[in-house]
Length: 277
Image (cartoon, rainbow, N blue to C red):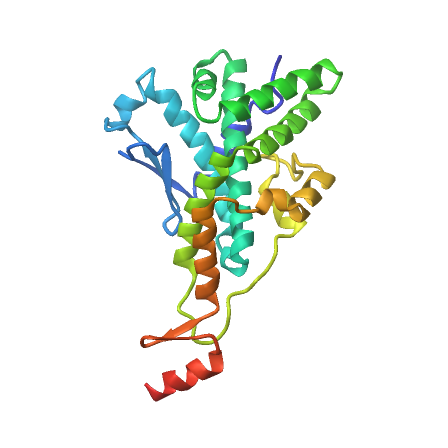
């Protein structure tokens, strides 16, 4: 079977090559990191020289998978970087989940394409890793859809949607994603002296853009699926006690302004104290 998406990874590389730099560093357990401000992707070299890591039968596929995942995440950053702070924190949590799930799916899609191209090693690493549940949902869905008579393009699109939902079914994935997103929100909440942060909600247009099939202007999530994501609390609800406490603290901080050592909920009153200072 020849994949209709065989050029997807190369297309994404071409789109971002002139915008994002790629560097290597020892990131311990993290496969990659991102420096948004300088548009830099940092790939884990596992303590080796990059050229040595890329020659390793064990580390090379892990670096390739991280690169595929980070490129998709960089695409999401390009969409969100100028507007993310305009959203309500609970919406940012949902956006974070969508982006991480989407990047995970594209990493899996890359590994599957490589398997079709006679390079099974990345796929084997996926099946032995923490995203094996999402990968199995993708391939099982793909095989069933192809057997039912779907074209490869439609079957792949629907299998990606199945994998997307499978990511959301994992409490650990959501908890870890929310933890990272809440730390990001902490850095975004300004020391306000004039107005509250915007409280925008996610719209279908943005959701669709974040889940476009690379090289096309169509989302792999159909309309009813997108509507469910926007309306169903299943996708957005934060159930972890620690993360929920962190979110509550952020929401409280948003509603107060600190002048000196005094916290105010009334912006006009806070301004009077600022003038007095």
